Length: 419
Image (cartoon, rainbow, N blue to C red):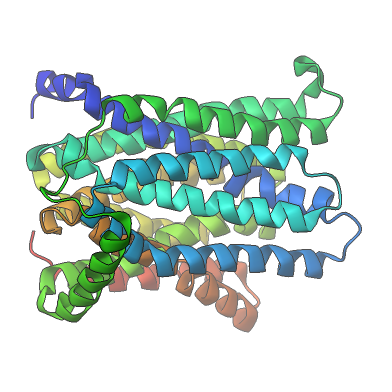
């Protein structure tokens, strides 16, 4: 695909409208999930409560959300396929997630129960939104364009989430610039801006993205019954779809490594004595490096094939986990942030486009439900592996190296999937 052809693809209304879904929902992932909610939950909504108890509460909230998402994703996708309602459910998930994110603005100090409830429902909205966004890739692009279009969506996601996060960080660190009383008001208002941002940038998709629908669209109840039957049949037949099953297993391991690096990076930086301000800068640096890098991996996927592109990203991640054991300064941590940024968006975008090629026609919602289910379950092994290694060795540097095992297993399983 030439540069002119890529520009033509990006200019198509359904394509850029679909990509803006990632631009909008990434604000929740960056500002709420990774940024402010965990800290604010401890220091504001659970003020005066022992740290161990707040950690337990937050862990339960994340656990409930993850379980509901993972268990319900394939069934919801199957029902959406049968009813031809993927776009409708994406819109519903958007308003659900955005409204609950915004609702955090009105949760008062000490009201951790309400904060937990809003967060769990908002997380459900975010992951369902992502699931149906992924499944619509096959509707806005032809197969030859999957790699580039998927990368385009992730690139805009990193850029959009990063831009709003910069504004939100300034609202917290410089509240007077925005006419706010203090940092706490800045955090609360940030949750409100996420909700507005998310909805506004999903509007183009509501107007211009059209899904491929079945010729016969049953009613809601019949679609639910048929969706359940179809899901059960898929589960029984999944063992015969060797390529798809091998990819899902490989994805489970290597994306667990990716997720663990994302989740453990800040904790690791603190463990080796780096200041929190430097870690925040590194997080922003990763966001903005990932924007052009994701587009670059779309070109790599087109020229070398998506599987080879994923192998390249896995190799970089494996080297990075070993290199992290030798970090000592802020500058070295920034270099590592750049390295991770170069492949983070790429491995996510090529995984989505590669899986899109394996999905049977007309069943994108259901199969991307499995894809997202594996992504949610892939948040268990890595943190446990790193935690147990740290506990046994009393060395955080060895704990980060242990994550390389997940990348090696994922790469080995990926060799069993046709290129």
